[in-house]
Image (cartoon, rainbow, N blue to C red; front, side):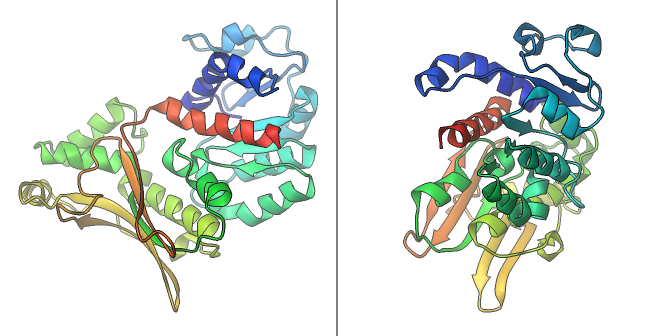
Length: 332
């Protein structure tokens, strides 16, 4: 579902990792492809991988032998005989749609639901998790926050009985790139264009610049890892748009650079969650994360500081998170 950079990279990874998957007893084929441009394409015998992995743009005309061109997600899943749905559509911060409906349809069909989309985690986590359990399927989303780094599975599978008190992180690569360019003397608008040129910023960068993308990530971490039913509106949000070039360069020269910091802290009154630009001292591990790199620093009852960093990931890192979720789902 969705055939942009992430799902394209996922198909390449599936091909590259076929031998590793076979060693785990996993066979696979792509039986359905859906996007706004292509519509619903399904063939239970398998779509042509040479088409799906080529560099050129594909069109409906490339699939003359497709068994069906469905009219809706349920019909598409049925025709494809889907065992797993990989959902990688655009983020809708308001309600997570239509990704929520697509994932719900997959689970109701009897397929595992895997997404790289943060929206469904924030807006429908409990519903989709309960539906998955009722159908003996998995709802997984490792790529939703920090590309393919195993944050969610680390806590859920490898750190049993850990109590998460809070976290701080730099989790939005677009603002990180923009601030870095401004430190080098670029005006804000030119820094945004640079982030777009290297592929980390959307054509409309407001979700990143205004802190929405970071706020959705904070909410997802709080809901899943801290067990709090926080709403997106509960995350205090401030973007980087009010920072001037002079402010950013002066902070960098003083050794206290600005970063868009994501944080949450458990208190007696509940979890306080926030996204805002902060000047960070040199001894803060968040201070020198540059470019498209990201970092999250967890505080737990056992580990006072548990830090995970990711150095300049590409789209294959996000796709790998979906591949890892796939292996977890079908190996259960």
